[in-house]
Image 1 (cartoon, rainbow, N blue to C red):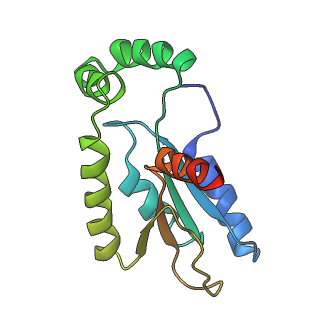
Image 2 (cartoon, rainbow, N blue to C red):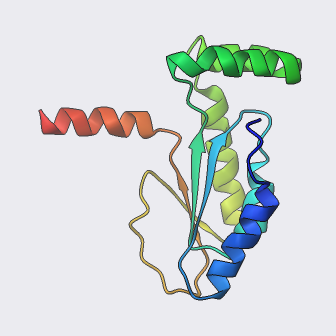
Length: 147
């Protein structure tokens, strides 16, 4: 969408760092509902990183109309899904994806946690998948604790 460097090029750079002994994180963000193939990225990255962070697409007020127009133009079959998520606040898509990715992680032998990447591992151990779909809840909880 923003003409950034290709995902493949980013993954190759991450692989170079990893094989040079540098800890790496694959940050899959933003996950566009119905568009981003999270499983394919995890499969590609799992042997060259220590953490895999997942973050859902969040639409701030000033960016929302741009993304909704983009979806309407490029992916009209997904427009109702985006309206449900971003206009009506439905979390079903993220909850279902969370469950799907938990199952997937188990199938490929990776740990899967939510909002916590504090697990420490040896350099050569498989990565941990960390779901940050609910980070807005963390911010609210942290604000309440500090009051």
